[in-house]
Length: 128
Ligand code: I3S
Picture (spheres, protein in one colour):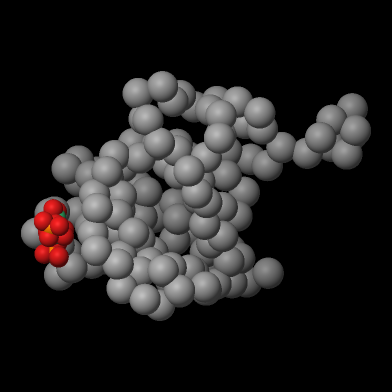
């Protein structure tokens, strides 16, 4: 079956639970509201799902459940941002449209993995 006739499904890079808060929308500062989020890195996008308890590694597939929001990683900026929070292991993702998110986990290794994986996708898109 060709990818076209099968309905192309992009490659799943990573999925898991992170704490998330949006801190700006289109460059305008927002009040923090930390919540656990099921985060899926698929193709060029980071996709956020509510209700992490009902999620699993297949939840992102078309038709399986509705994302809360998603972020295009093309042209995005990624930085460690512990200075922006009292929490540990915080990084900031800024999209080309000026939306900024903080992502965090208490588990050091998990946050490093997420940071590096998102970094790799952004770098790959920068080279295209
Ligand atoms: O950087 P801030 O504004 O001190 O962040 C904290 C507050 O947003 C707080 O909410 P209220 O000001 O609405 O009570 C949040 O509950 C905290 O989690 C925020 O700080 P951290 O340091 O957890 O990112």
